Image (cartoon, rainbow, N blue to C red; front, side, top):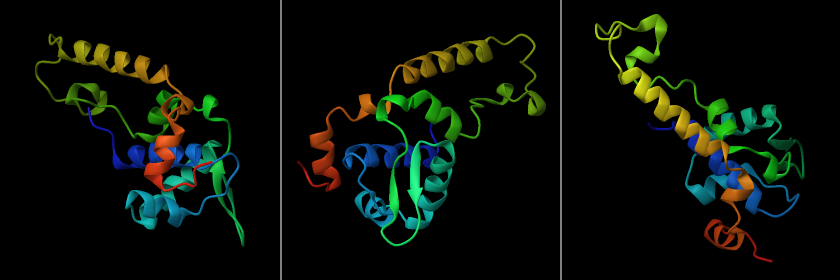
Length: 147
């Protein structure tokens, strides 16, 4: 299974903000530069993350973005579920568009569904805080000031 760039960028933005320092406002350009990602790609990601409450966006002069809740409250499984469009690993996962002739007797769908559930059980066991417990090392790589 492969995550979309949208989910990848969403997770990277959250990691960046979690390691930026408590309450520090960050500019989108700062994140774009740190990851080598276009600001245009980040605009939608940041907008959508703001709608979820995971980040807070402050407009105007002196504005920026920061986490909208504690890193311990942001569950990684939830982030992945909300940022991915679907989890149709194979055609038979999509009831409306399944033309596979094996579907009535095939066990592949059930096996892959079980694997997907296990995947999410693992992701559900982690929060943003778990992913950023090595804040010092992450901050160095991202170019944050280290305190």
